Image (cartoon, rainbow, N blue to C red):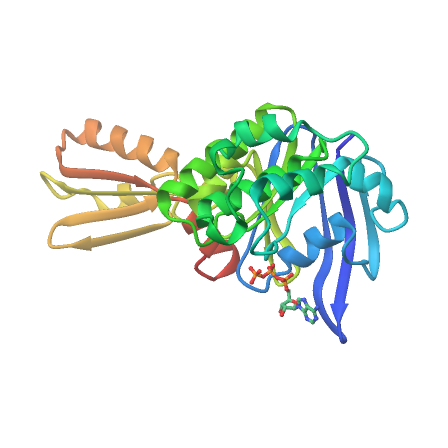
Length: 300
Ligand SMILES: Nc1ncnc2c1ncn2[C@@H]1O[C@H](COP(=O)(O)OP(=O)(O)OP(=O)(O)O)[C@@H](O)[C@H]1O
């Protein structure tokens, strides 16, 4: 049984539909990404999973529980870090961990959690004095303190420098490796590609695509771009017949082809057959960015 099931969820604010029939399931033990442009409906969707918003239609189940009607049960299995989290500026890391631990019947050992998240030396530090990366680590610790089976992380690494972001990624992987399912809302392609087992691309309140990162990339219009200068001109009909060819451009004797892996294989066979040498050969694969642009028409 999937640990999260979202089926046909709709949500409108003041008559404007922002989530328009979203469905997906998250399997236990995976890092599932929700990716989409600003205002796509990502946060509204995960807030329905967390029970913070009531869908107008459709159903949500977390470990079989309804987040609205069975709020207490869902609170026991789901930990959340919200998009705009804040704590009182004067609370120390130790006090925050103890306070949150007191809210759960069977909390994690907060000292061990602080150790895992590299916060032991900061236990006496006030929230306002923590760096961005330390605050995010504290929010991950607070999301994990109830020993949840699922943790929802919304825009966790926004505002972090590249090094702190990478450290946070390693922590998210550790969380998953410890057996907790992760639902991750993100804007960052590199983050989604590196961390997620599967990604739902949300655009205009709908699921535009749901696949593994590699599966999404292979859907980009020109998944592979090959450029080279042939030692002798190639026959236009031979080039046009290459399997999977999406586009062809010639400039100053240099050829640029976009297509698929099959296009590259076909091109290599054509070069061998005609005894042509490809000078300055470059093969570039599409990225999740390209797939995202194709799917949503927007840059991340
Ligand atoms: N409480 C609310 N009342 C009215 N409109 C809202 C409310 N919350 C969100 N919206 C609107 O709903 C749309 C979807 O918002 P949501 O926060 O779910 O998108 P998002 O994909 O998470 O965006 P972002 O990446 O910018 O955080 C936006 O146009 C937003 O302005």
